[in-house]
Length: 108
Image 1 (cartoon, rainbow, N blue to C red):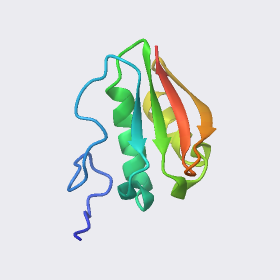
Image 2: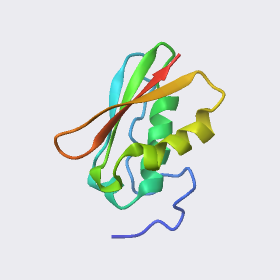
Image 3: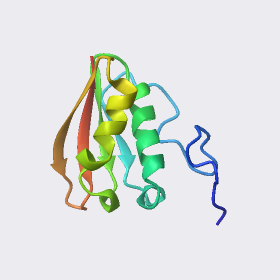
């Protein structure tokens, strides 16, 4: 399996994006797939892209991979840096039975 050395760019390499369309409804982004287990930066990038692809008045549930633990330890800072002054707020919902976590991002 080839390793993409451009870990922090916005190209997806061989990785499928979390979404390929804008969602005009509330939805869930599956960030639990194996591709996220060893790549926290990919998980954060795709979480941000999921929010960017959700229209105002809706929310997206960011379902994160269990390998990274509670999202407050790594995801909240990334979201603050990207959406700090924008009308986006997030809240922790719950830990899934599979070990992952759900963060709900509301787009105002």
